[in-house]
Structure formats: C-alpha cells, structure tokens
Image (cartoon, helix red, strand yellow):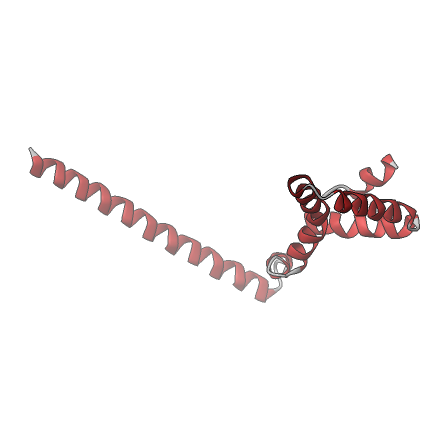
Length: 125
C-alpha cells in the first residue's frame, strides 16, 4: 500500500515538474517570437520601454516623499512630541500657499508614476 502511494506521489511530482518545464519553454519561445517581431518592425518597443522604466528609483523616492508626513504624524503620536505635529501643520500650510501650477505639477508627477487620475484630484480643489 505504501509503495502504491509513493509511486502515485512520484508520478504526480514528475507530471508537475514536466508541466513547469513545458511552461518555461513556451514563455521562452513567446519572448523570442516577440523580439523577432520587434526587430522586423511589426510591433513597437513600448513593452520594452515600460519594463525599463519599472526598474527606476523614482517610484521609491516619490513613495518616501509622500509617506514622510504620515510617518512623522505616527512618530508624534507615539513619542508625545507635539512639535512634530506643529511642524507638519506648517509644512502643509506652506505647501497650500505654493502657486497652483506647482501643486498641479507635483500632483501630475505623482500621478504619472503611480497611474492615478491627477486631473480628478486637481478638480476637487
């Protein structure tokens, strides 16, 4: 009985392994055909450009920049430091006093990086 279960498990494992190898071959063939079509000019290089842009550092920088006020608010609550909260209020007051074109530009950059609808955010103002 145990030998039957072991044989069944081995066959199942071998089948899963073969399927994964077949999937890798198909993905490799698809990538090769796609590259050939791009080289012939049948399709554009948009996909290659988008994948190259995904490896940049700007997304992480903007995420840190946008998250910093929230992290400082959390710090001010748990450290009982009211000065941080006051400084954040001053920051947003100053940011609100910046020219509208700069605020729209900043929102546009964040929107472009993260795919948000910046125009809807600007319209609410």
